[in-house]
Length: 273
Image (cartoon, rainbow, N blue to C red; front, side):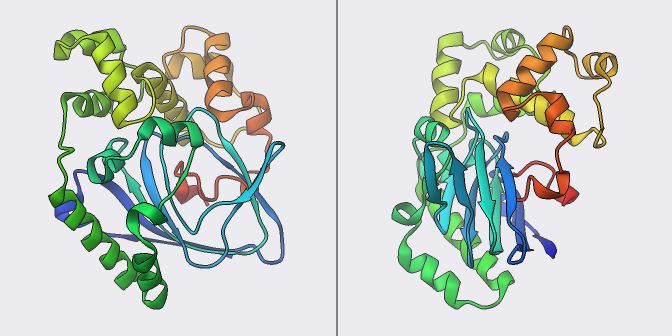
């Protein structure tokens, strides 16, 4: 059983938050495997029942009950056979840096960071004691508003560049944006990694692949010529290389997966659940 509910983002937070979602999944009778794919967002996840287990060859541990995530280089393999009852704040790519001043390069490398030291155990326990989901969301929003007012990490020109990349779905050339905004390439790379976690070119590549996935039906086999033309790739090998870099597998393998058993907490295409 799956339930999803979306909550309205307060006006004062719309410049850093894309969506607020409550997600409930009862997987107590069936182990679910999920691929936590990098997204062109950042986020805060609050688990109030069970959480996901990282299921990788060299890593076996459970995700924290409260954690940050963002754009990263490599997906996480996850599994659960419990009950997921979570609130997910999906922020703009630079949202976590704007609010918390996080080390986004470290977050990108680790793929998630425990949020208890930053947000506080007492605050999490307050959320646990509150039974109403809407009240939980309101408490988190008030916390973010207070933090946003008190920080010094305000908007920079690199945030505008990031927005332009997303607006173009990753197709715009970084060189074009460098000329448009009259900024140095090395400056852009340094600031992008600091505020978002990835270099601008890698972020754009991820944006294009995610846009492709969000706008395709679930196919039994890819129609290569159409995909290359519709999404601005130079050729089929270019598309496959970028796809494998972001998703971790070839398009053929991905399109033949059991899509009922994937992308449960990935910020991508949450309405497909």
